[in-house]
Image (cartoon, rainbow, N blue to C red; front, side, top):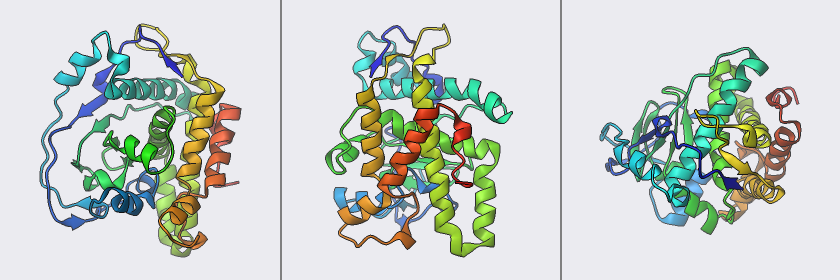
Length: 298
């Protein structure tokens, strides 16, 4: 994977709230995020691995974002060496592609969703959260949230070391944004309420669809451009796609249960097995078409 050093980094798509976190007592997000973040069980697993509390805290801090610092250093010559600048470019690419593809595939106009960079803790439209929840999308405020230190946990503790793990994570979360825009997420929640016994199975289908959407973006990522028409990526290789598939495998429900020292329990799955997550990322990538991602009918 090679980013284009000439591409402009559009930090207007980011809310940089790093340094604005607070503390508090234990709790949970009061309303659902889409799938509870990219990895579901990882909420518990990360808390164990990095020594944090479970999931989320009751945080009262709600300071506004200040993008001055990130904009300044993402305009610098070494911007591609900066983790936050690279991730901003990934967000730029994902949203650029969906802005064109969503009307073509689903007849809906795309609405941009900011990604919030935070450290330790953050206030969201879905409640207060800390880094233990991992990356997640909040349908109540249409924002993606990520503490960028998650990537270190993903590499060191879960074995997903490749660079392409990062855009895969973000593309998955923006897949949840698409589900929110076209009504899939709301429909799934209503069905969970009608059939609570199928709640986990429905959650798995939602998550696998987001994986498939991530694969569809990956297939088309080299065609995305900044506002001036400069390509954002120079190349995405077969090795990058393998890293995406490796990441999908690392965060399958069965793999995470084993890593947490648990027996594999399919009844507790919320995101799908490693094999399923790889299968649906590959389905999206091979087709390049989000309409091939109907996990609910499959």
